Image 1 (tube, helix red, strand yellow):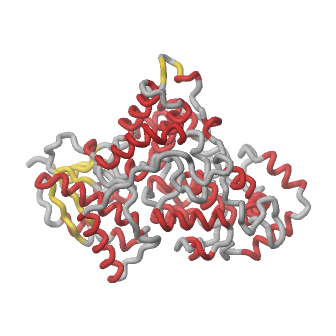
Image 2 (cartoon, rainbow, N blue to C red; image 1 turned 180 degrees about the horizontal axis):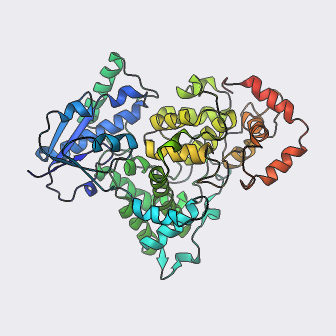
Image 3 (tube, rainbow, N blue to C red; image 1 turned 90 degrees about the horizontal axis):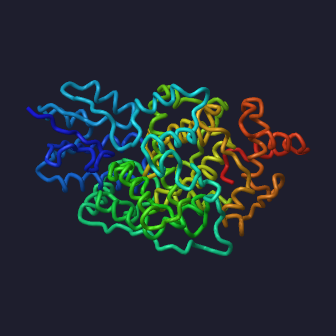
Length: 491
């Protein structure tokens, strides 16, 4: 009897099948949504994508809805094969089943064995910059002969511009938004019913903003490459209070649902440079995100042992407070933090700098438990998955591994936010002030963090100048006491 290909809900693109006529199994597990309070729009996106794929495949697929995967599988008698799942828990589950063959991973560019060979040959900590160069060379992306196009591997310095002065929004066409259909209406009705039954969500329901089919995702990719890519690079680190999308591709959830083949998207971006004249810094910035960072984080999730998730080298012991977990933006007076929480509540998404330098930065300064922050990012973002968030949060955002995969703690005061955004204008707090009623919680939190952790942070963590400045401050003890009094209250 031929094996049926079991596709998880993050393996929904055609590149997860070898034959377009291959028999398929899809399972919708209600128990997944009982385990944690997902963002309502993330739950909608996952269910809609799964049900749309079932509709596309028609009689080719068996689509089962059940309380659990195990319950659904009781009625399946034929042998199954499944592409390597994206979480350790799911991999352990499928390996423990009879008549299930686990295939190598798909949906990423650099294979696990290729990465392990590269990583085993490195001395000391693993760095994305070195992996990214290896991946570019290995997969022949943006290279001419033995050299990178443009003579440089990175155009990062060109891609760190603050937003244009006086601009409320970038002057780019908005991303195309999908049209909801009967499947979306059915999903919304089911989620309403589940909430009445006691399943809890966070965030607000709203019109679906992210693709659920490969066709929708490809249309958004084409639009991005043609209309938004030139502005993406320069302003990829910028923040504007009234423009949550800026020029970002809004494709992270499409990659993570398996709707887009990342290598195909990388080649399309490369062709936008070579044939359509797209700016090289912008193209390189997009390739860096997909071929570099995304593959780096995926591979590190498997390369590091399972205990990595519990890393807490800075001894962060405070629990994430309810106002933050529940995205209560109105409880917060700090304009940047309130704005980012509001955007996340409304859309289930903000780009990488609000994640890292507002949400993650604030948690790092306050000493919130890294494992709780992994859970927060996993459930609150439409593109959040265990493999995505474990290394991103433990290693990069919360520096809980003391630099195994990053060169420094991503901690900053209000000056950084003021430079890279328009949030500080009109805020009740002063980014230049660290003590008193007007003290910016990020500025005060920055110095408090450095003082509290100076003996834990290794000396090679690119903080020598900051530590020297810390030694010259005469009010550090008062700042730490002030931040201690603020505690877990919303700023």
